Image 1 (cartoon, one colour):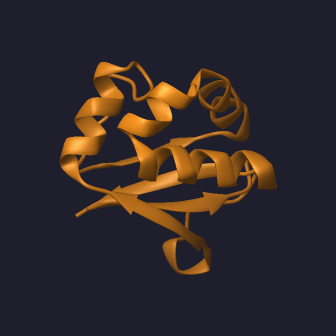
Image 2 (cartoon, rainbow, N blue to C red; image 1 turned 90 degrees about the vertical axis):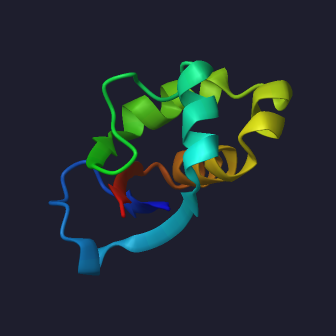
Length: 92
């Protein structure tokens, strides 16, 4: 599972201080990568961070067809966009 948490752009990524946003399985991560919503250099089992500006760009790319293919990630991105948050992801 790749777990996402909401984070302010200026906030350090201390996991215990973050609000959990949701998680995705490997298959959904790979689909998002194929759709160019997740950058190729990012690793499912690693840690990465998207700023609120990156979240906005990803939200613009979320068409209904794309959202249907990656429903969990789409929901996470939409919630972060609504709250004007970035996202930090931790793979396990």
